[in-house]
Length: 126
Ligand SMILES: [Cu+2]
Image 1 (cartoon, helix red, strand yellow):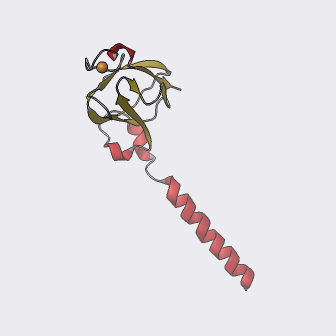
Image 2 (cartoon, rainbow, N blue to C red; image 1 turned 180 degrees about the vertical axis):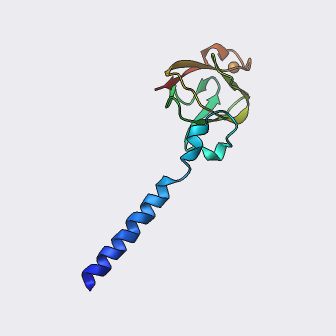
């Protein structure tokens, strides 16, 4: 009898774990930019200060929706990404899917000061 209980409890625990991480995969197939930010599991957090971004490169997966969360933590900055429709100033989010792997240049799109030109990072799509 004790063994049965043990099995039952672990079965319940396992199914709870599976339920926990199985959700929301349907969104991925749709692609596009309409999905609300909360629907994506993948997010990159880009922060800008005088005069740099918080990371030199950011990585996302090709064909999977992701959300860019951008924030200026010091000064007033923005981001654009070469070849992509990204244009955020000061603070904001954008959800998108990039199908083509490659490297995209992230730059500050606000003339923010003397070292504005140094505000460059990379978006690596794998
Ligand atoms: Cu700038």
